[in-house]
Length: 114
Length: 115
Image 1: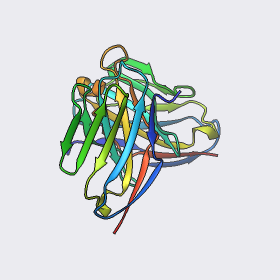
Image 2: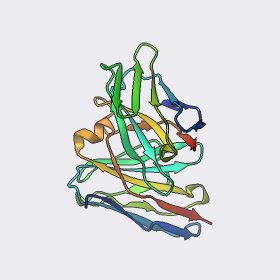
Image 3: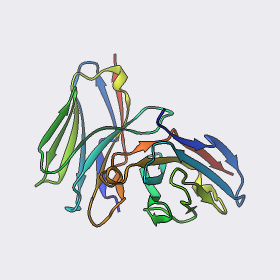
């Protein structure tokens, strides 16, 4: 059973546009939601993370929006650049009962055209 | 340089031939974990370890073994590899608290092909 559902599977955006990736979860015990960025041939790297007591977190051009009631969260990349072309994974964890478990979405391959 | 090092990076082997993928981190992290990445399936957790001599199963532990005898090392063992274990494997580590919140440092991956 997929704990975190991510969409779209692939995304093509023009340079300067906004990239939006969505994730949804069912388990209300999840209390931490990181996003990872992966370039070809590399391991994933933490991009930005959010806790459910915050509705939005921004770091540069990257923003996470969190909707606790809908059990959804999304990544917005403003002014998308060709260097943002990568695979993005959302994830969720529960710091309580499932110590050490981290559940990933299936990933979104983003291509930004110059 | 802080890093998670995996070896080998690439390996082609045959069904049934035991192999070990090593993972070592130099950041004194308590938490270590193994993931496999398959097209369309994302990253799935195989095993994880919260500290030395403490290991637990993730989502897809079948066919794999791990051990954590030292803090810095967390090898992944495939006793009798099968073609369905052909995949890209990642080792990750973190301080214990960060491991539980998902802030991990990943290695560069080990691409395994089982014929």
